[in-house]
Length: 400
Image 1 (cartoon, rainbow, N blue to C red):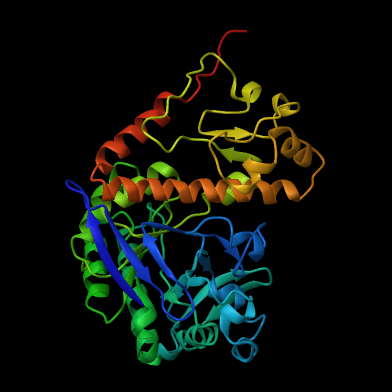
Image 2: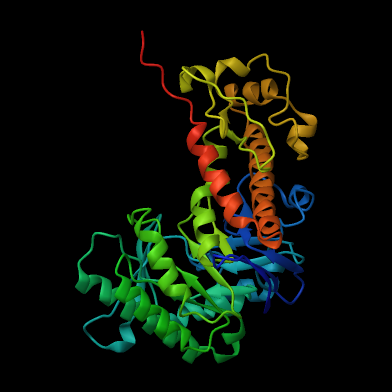
């Protein structure tokens, strides 16, 4: 793995770069989006559609614990790792644990140190040696150590313990598999404590890892708290290594992370809109003129000018595409009325077409961010986007 910083924005830590994942995968421009998957495959998009979705749709997130026992590590090794197992050798895979994990130390001794996580069959325990066995079998392009994430309201003692456990887990993994150091991302936690965030960042930055993964965000911290937490961590981490983050999914949150210097985002936002029957429609160009609407119910209109609800009856006879300016497969070939019909009849094709559009649009959003940083107008773009989203939320009609 290799990471090169290309450009920085004046006044913020926002930066663009190129991430070379090695092996079969091609290079990727950052800031970039990790595509959400279920056991390595997109939820509704088949690999043959994924290849034509967007030039940047080449890096996917998966949870190694979802493939921990089925198939077994020996089976994964025989298949040739996650790339060959999924028949996607040209794509990049990053093993990031999106589930809540609690690292614990058994009273019987340090050899019982492990992580507890929930499965459909109840709580299971995985030790560092088992985790690294799975990573070695899957052979992802990058992998993150397990974070002991805690919500914002825990005690200082519990928060400090989570930092100690997260650092210890990384140390155990690096001791077990030193040959995998070149693909390791060290997890950084600390909750809403500025002191613990700094301590965690200092501990992980001193380890021999290729990058960093910021965990514990989106678990109750306020919008006002987040910038100081991010800035404190970014001031410690070396500039020449990539930084990823989980928990920042909304467009405003992504911009907040980019301004702090985050390079890789693990977000389920396109997927969550898709399963809700929504399509993204927010503009990406600062020159776009958006028609303001007022005194209309969201339930009546089925939209808030940043997304539209295709389940709304107003789209039953609408023969226009989801977005006139969008170049995705869905917008080029299908109408709102057709997708509304598919949703009404519970056809899975509705989710496929919506995920194609939503993923494409969100990847275009990241392209707009990279263009703004390269053009040195990211601060203006950030302000415009946030202001636009706030101003164009349709007010609810209160009169009867």
